[in-house]
Amino acid sequence: MRRLVVFAVLAGVLLGPGACAVAIPLIAATLPGPACGALTVGNVPSSLMARTATGDVVRLAATELEHAATIITVGNAIDGVGRNGIVIALMAALTESRLRMLANTSTYPETAALPHDGDGSDHDSIGLFQMRPLAGWGTPAELMDSTYQARAFFGGPTGPNHGSPRGLLDITGWRSLPKGATAQAVEVSAYPDRYAAFEPVAGAILDALTAPSAAGGALAETTAVVFPLPSGTWTPTSDFGMRVNPVTGIRTLHAGADYAAASGTPILAAADGRVLAAGPRGGLGNHIEIEHTINGTTVVTIYGHIRDGGIHVAVGNTVRAGQQIGEVGSTGRSTGPHLHFEVHPDGTPGAPIDPVPWLAAAGATHAARAVTSEWCSA
Figure (cartoon, rainbow, N blue to C red):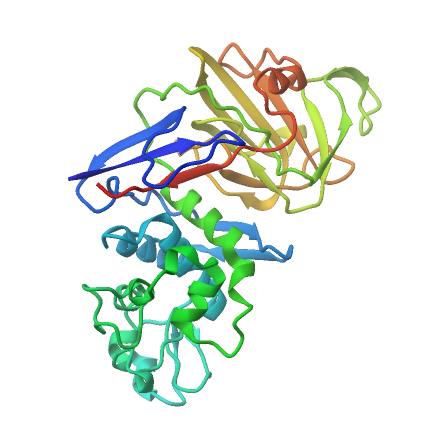
């Protein structure tokens, strides 16, 4: 029996080898499995948007995220894989197939009769990781099974190929290699530099799919607060307070702070909490409301003008600080893409305060602090 402990890691705090505890524990679950406990996949969202290291937008639908959930579940059940190994596997599958189960009907016509998400045409490659039967990865039928492919990618003593071809755990010193290089060592691609760009996307998938999502129950108290947009993506455009509304021309209370950002920029949950509302709301357009318990006080944060199709959570979902919950847009009464961010410290939407000093007091003035899941050997 081992235990996974999920933490919010403050900027500048480093986890040493084998570390299982740092300041600010957010979630601790004890379940059977390897490493420091079992990582459980929560409700799979209907979509997810993330950016590669080169700034390209990747949009994933529920089908792709279900395959990602399988990879995460399989990896967590294999001793020695851990978070980094799962991220590498997701990087590889994103690069090879965009997390789609691809048949190969030109080489293996029988794959057309098996569940698949599309038809590939790269030599005799099949599936999420584009593994080749002729290279010994498995039969066409085996490679059309996402669980089998994930086990083959991770390899090791419990893998189906016993080190030939090599899976992740069969590569000596893989933990000291760059993640992109490790993915290439497994995939042996003609394009070895492609994998590294998908590392931030893989991390976003892992964080989103392993965030707790069950409704009901008391909210866990937290002290971690993060800025609701990624660093370097936004410009402040309108402060909290009385102003003439640029759309209606009426002088009224501007109940939040506005941050201009490109349409599609990820919107991040400011703290751990539970989603109270997610959908259209008058002048706010598409919006999300989240209830938090921060330092013993109930707080509601509101995120407005989210783009159509850009809400990534549902009412009742539980989210973590820094988790992507939506995408910047310009719905409702808006003159351009931006995030309208409100803070209501009484626990019910209706008594807003200036969010700028609230964020500053929490040390969240510029960038979100990273949310990570860390494993250790026990």
